[in-house]
Length: 613
Image (cartoon, rainbow, N blue to C red):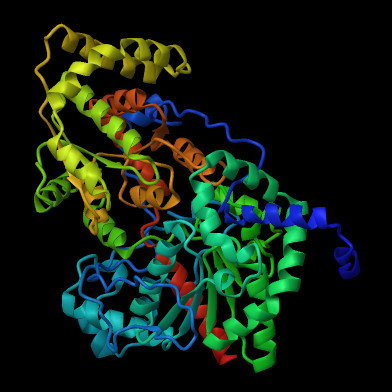
């Protein structure tokens, strides 16, 4: 086979290198279809669902106690192996709080073919308490029967759990700066390692930039170019997401890069290797196995798939120790494309920041009386009007013009329909947009609404038919809009708030009633964790198309890429509290706020078993 490869013509080799650029594509379920079905507002929920008062179950397995936030694991990728590693504090930074009770069957009912992470914190705590003396048992009530736990007891429980789980670890994360999602997932996992295994050190390594040959070492700049040119991205994605390409890629990367990658990984002397990037699985896994054989030490290799609805074929390897996935879609792909056995697949959810686990515990059920009261208190804390509904707008990779137009349409629609609301716009480091929003003439924005009637007729012409329930909701919406046009509805009071670089995203999502965002897997997972309905405005062809389907099929949002249509639907949602409740409950069913904790506990348990074997 090697001799055959050496005889490939120069033209074939050039084609191979060009196709390899598609490695930056981070996922898609199938290379054939990017059609986006529309969710009729409430998704698959029927009229009977609307009238139901059933309280949704939330996946609360894993670490459920409310802990103080640990310092961010905002680590830069490490180049030299002798550079300073990231270390946890010498003492645990866990605070006090109230552990919640895992809901029996809340996660297991989602798919019969997945494996839950081994021991959750509450299970370990129960084991430790069971082995305590009779005197301690007299003072400490079992977790299952004590939803209210004193701060002193919580500290004792957390210390006991930490002792039970094992000592610190040296963790090596494999990732690359091809989008913020991979880095964010690695950092959320790193923080959980620090929380659960005090004294843990970790590094984030981009093997291709440091040790890859062409074209692999150009992964980051190629990603930046392709993400700005969606048509090129789509073409290369479909070329690369095939079995033939995967075979060529595996052979080429293994022959040209494995030895250098092995030396690089060995220099870090890890106890465990965790990949959070689709291009860093086969070769690093082979290298890790060879290092283990050389040293006579078992070094497990794990893959955490950081995509939600679509995944590239390079994610899946059947010989990993375990693979953690976020949805049934990815689970099926792993078994079909990677032939990964069931006992190595874990339906964990997408790892997100610990702040969302804290806020999910505090919020509870968003639509309950307690949830609404907590939402108002968070709004007050953020300096927002607690009595106005709130829409959170995030641009992601969209241009300033598109995001600005969406905000204009939202403002005009809310004002003319008499909706009192706050529009909070995450501008990030875009000071130009933030300053423009602060100085914008909103009266002039309202005056332009009359020029949009033609575009509105075109939009309505191409809308797909909806169910009778949704049509009734739209009819009510149209009646109110007609009253507004006749001057019979008082003008709404709308505030537009430009936000800079947001460090309290979990709180802003709790404060919001609707999220307007591109179809990034991290944003969707964070919104679902706190039961927040989502209006998606764009997606990257190939890798993010499946994320849209997750939202539509899950029944907690919709997709529209036209600013007028976005404003029209969001306004309809805000005026239909029953619909918002259905969508919020559906989001909570999908959400997994403790996914990062679950993953880390499982990885740590398996790693310690290898170390002690």
